Length: 366
Length: 222
Image (cartoon, rainbow over all chains, first blue to last red; front, side, top):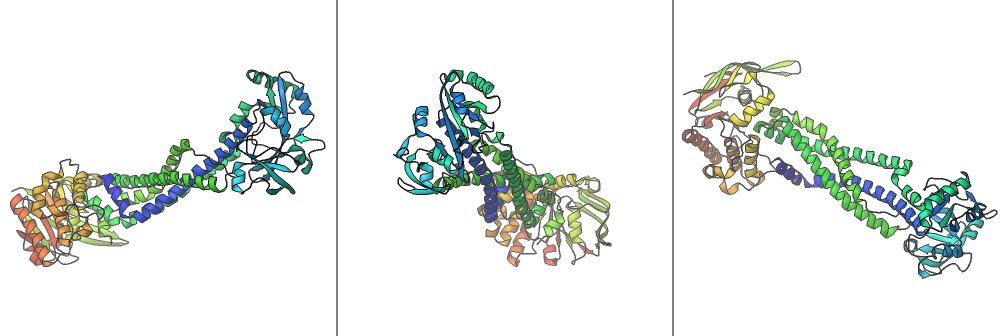
């Protein structure tokens, strides 16, 4: 019976119910989209690292997300090549050219030896030092096709090929041109070195051997270990950012539900008086308000999930290269908990106010 | 006949700021089970305060109030709430139906709060008697004043209370509906021995009761 009253109350003031749930939904959508974006970025980075086909990566830093250009002197490459159980070594050089987008320099012939080369949707490999290969996401976002010209690092590049996304990066250029443009050619420096071993089953053993030889000047990590680093939990700054957004969402949810429930309690003073006269105890009145708040939160949660799909579709449609976003169903229960906690906090004061309402005064309320 | 309401030396004082308002100044009253009593008096005479005390909506300041064998003076707020659930049915001037629920659910809500699980269908005869059988699925805003008051009477009766307390039950009704509602209350009293205490300022309404008492300045004059 109480549930029926809650439902009827929410239906009766449907505009306020809809708007309150919508605002809670926007908070849920923000959390889910933020998590989806964070995961999307990390998963795409992991996918690209995997697509290179390397068994081991050599880096200056153990943090997968840290890419500072020109950190690895070229002299390390012959040193690694000389080690036993190594079949191929590929130096790579990356420069950030747009927010969240890097330009990746490679020697295409070396890459071909390494993993067989890129899979092209249109066009083909570099023919001149000014050629650029873009992936389908980037081509779609910026309406690029073969023969178009783009400018990066104060240099005009001609699009020679379009590849499937997830291979190296959105923008791939000849490594020497990129090193030259950024002053990293003489002597050549790399941001990352990919290594292939003769027997992948011995990867961990080779990692140990390389780390002994490199003496801490570079860190060797298996591709598997590197991939596992592409997680929100391994990036403290991102973790804090997500926690802050989550906290803000709880606070905004609290404010919205507080305002909605407070208005409802004032509006329904007389009804609360009626219920009290009929024999409703304060706990029953509080229960009524809490149920209403939870229902608002759940409606907001459903709105939020739907809105997160809409946001994803919008992002993928408009800026697929800049903001890779994934669906995060494992966060749906957490988002529900966040919405409910905010709503419950928002319902406490109005609920207690209603529960403490004097029946006679409430019945006299106009 | 046994007493269902017994009041001795009832005083009720409200504190408004620094001022004490003595709404009831020593009321003595006995009501037999099965009686239909009306209390008449002008505004400010204390009749609404008496209604609130007898309805266990507010505790007495002084004196004894016994409702169906229970002394209100000793009750906590929670116990007074339980007393309202089981022993008292209210009929208000402004009907006081929950606007979001239809008539059936308004009645059902009183049963739910009273802890009763008996199907509402068992009350079809009562609904026929009250003339609301065909209006049960309508929300209050779709009902006339007379219909709303009849639903309110059904709601008051549905937990089979010891006493019906009616506060100006015809105050918002036209003559025709007033006559119908008062006739219903009289029939309930005569045919079902339902104890009714009605507060009114209208002598014509008061005349429907078996006995009428007058109040003035917080006292019953007789």
